[in-house]
Length: 80
Image 1 (cartoon, rainbow, N blue to C red):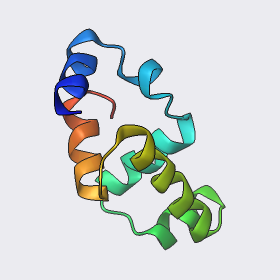
Image 2 (cartoon, rainbow, N blue to C red; image 1 turned 180 degrees about the vertical axis):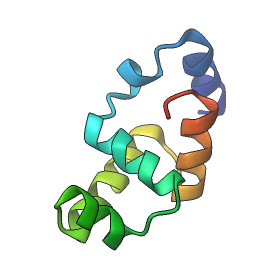
Image 3 (cartoon, rainbow, N blue to C red; image 1 turned 60 degrees about the horizontal axis):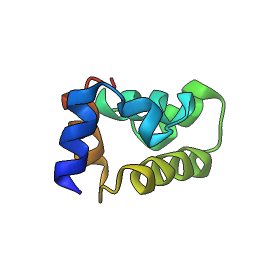
């Protein structure tokens, strides 16, 4: 999986290949800024459980295990 992700990053096709939604990317960005689920929910006018669901979907699509890895990957890949 790591090799595939490196290839996606270098090819510049990361968003298309992973099919991350705009909302998922937005939530990853806000996580990177250090906002909590409740703060993100309030900012986006959504329920905290909706934020958690979007983050889980992003984790599944990327094959990563936690928020830290998701933020790191998104930063390194230029996604955010």
